[in-house]
Amino acid sequence: MKVLITSVLLLLLYGVNGQATQVDIVDFYHWTASDGNDYEMVVVTPDFWENEETPATIRVRYSRGGSYSVVEFYAVLSFEYDEDSNLIIYLLADSEAEFIQGAGSYSPDNFVLKFDTAGALLYGYQADNNELDKPDDEIIYADLYLTEYGDSDNLRATIRKFYSSSDPMYRELMDYTTQFD
Image 1 (cartoon, rainbow, N blue to C red):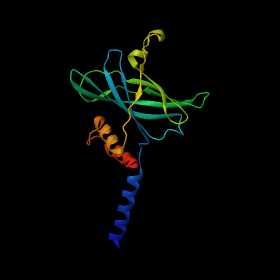
Image 2 (cartoon, one colour):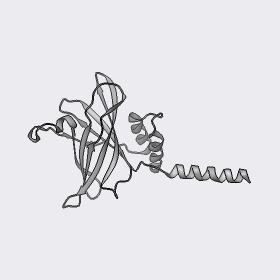
Image 3 (tube, rainbow, N blue to C red):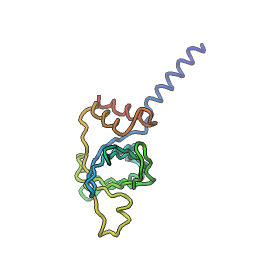
């Protein structure tokens, strides 16, 4: 009897654990800064449709001097709809950047993304906190572009640019990719 109860509990735990997820959206974007340096980023969020503000995890990958760095910071995601029912998403940095790979200093980024009613990216802009500290007429925004990944295998490969198997969120991200298999 103990074996039966233990087996049922284990099945329930694994079943609940496999279904519980905080990853609802994983999107990739890239931009070129005014200094000519290229940046890639991934944004990971839980379901945000029912909340005015939702936490987001952002990782940015870039190369300087031939070696790649990856930084992580948190942002607050908020959204609104314009008069044409297009979705506008704001990702505003909410923490300091922490180096996951590499070292140095990094000013967290802020993003504005606008999607049409079919979900296609109409435009995106990026400016880091240092840029936003300038007077409005001196701020330079970088154009942000969606990074396509194609299929689930490429999605996994793209995630691995930002996350290693030792990262706490890695398993959840890999579970997320199974919906595209």
